[in-house]
Every structure is written in C-alpha cells, then in structure tokens.
Length: 52
Image 1: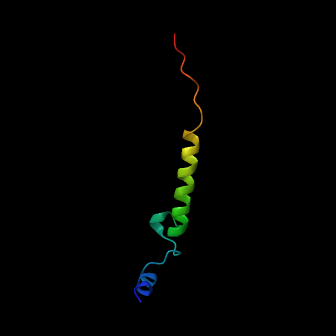
Image 2: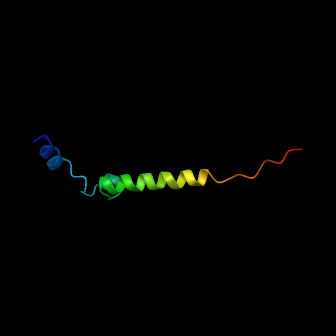
Image 3: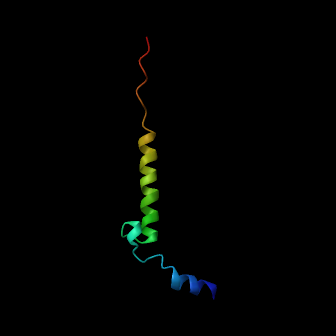
C-alpha cells in the first residue's frame, strides 16, 4: 500500500523542468553517461613532461 502513495506522488517518468525537461530516470542516465565520458577523457595518457 505504501508504494501506491509514492507512485502517485513521485512519478519517475514525469518530465521535470529543474532537470532540464528530462524525467528523473532520463536525467540519471544522462548524468552517469556524462560522468563515464569525463572519466574516459581523464584516462587519456598525457605526454611526459620534458625535463632538463
């Protein structure tokens, strides 16, 4: 019974203005995809520093 109250109040598929007009599920998927892309960029090998 408790889940019905939550489902009626909190709709995980409803588009949210403060989430950039994405549903909470879409926003979360985008967040983790962006985070994974950022981590891949950070894992690129850097050129070794030139030392004298």
